[in-house]
Every structure is written in structure tokens, then in C-alpha cells.
Length: 197
Picture 1 (cartoon, rainbow, N blue to C red):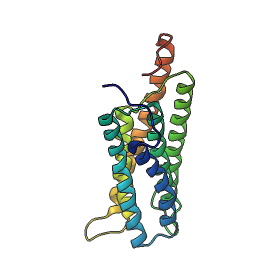
Picture 2 (tube, rainbow, N blue to C red; picture 1 turned 180 degrees about the vertical axis):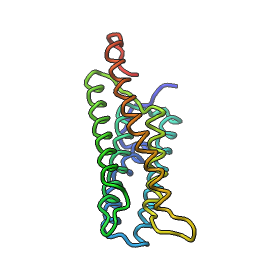
Picture 3 (cartoon, one colour; picture 1 turned 135 degrees about the vertical axis):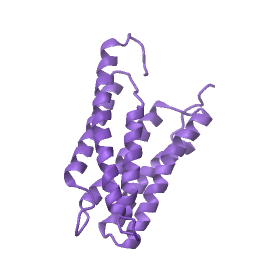
């Protein structure tokens, strides 16, 4: 199926950009956390994460997958997730996420973004791998209960969120290393004139 001409304002890209727009709202809600504001932040974050699945599905069905979309989508994910992680680390009173885990995840995202820039400079667009997607899923599963935070009967959202955050951290390190190895292998072996992998 032929691709349509790229339009930055098509629906999939607008959904991607909406995740970036949601980040400052989440920061504002988490700057003064109360049960109500935490609940609103949790709901907004969950809806924003659903848009991550929806924009990719729409782009594929409409044939509007583009290199710019492949760049914007992971960028929006990073802005959204890192904004929440930083605010959870800086929560007044008791931090909801360990600062060293947040720093480690942030360093991984900066590293992968740098590698993407190197790949782009070489004419390559490297999409997300299964490991990277699994990492994102575990981050979402961790951050939703960490945002909810408060106990509901026997359910301890905070404890559940921390368990999934550990899994997300392990996957982040694994997928970041795999991305580096993949890029290095492609740069060494690809024939001239191959623009995308």
C-alpha cells in the first residue's frame, strides 16, 4: 500500500503531540499532590498512554507511517514518562520513586536519544525493538499505581508500582545495551545507500 504524503498535523501525529502537551499538566498536578490530584494525574497518564497505541495503529491503517512519526513517537514517550518519574522522585513529603532509579532511567533515555541522533546522521531510522516496547509497557504498569499511590482497602498501589518499576529498570538497561549493539552492528555491516532499518 503506497504511503500518503506526510502531514505533521494528521491525526496520528496530533495524538503523539498530545502526549507531549500532557506532560506539563501532569507536572502541575503532581507539584501539590492530594488524593484528587493524584487520581487525575493517574487518569491523564493512562489516557495519554492509550494514545501511544492508537497513534501507531492509525498510522499503519492509513498508510501514513513516516520517519518523522518514528522520531516523534519515542520522543513523546520519553517526555511523558520522564516528566512523571521526575515529579514522583520530587514528591513533597515522601518520594514515590527512588531518585537513583529515576536518574538511571533518565540516563538510559538520553543515551538512546543520542544513539538515534547518530543513526539519523548516518541516514538510518531505527524503530523501537520488542525489548524497548516491553520496557515502555512495564514503565506504564509501574507508573499508573505509583501515581494512584494511595492504598485502597487491601490494595497497596505504591508497593505494586515499585515492583514493576524494578522490572522496567532492568528492561531499560537491557534494551539500551541491545540498541547500542544493534546500531554498531548495522553501521559496520550495512551497504551504502540503505536508508532505513
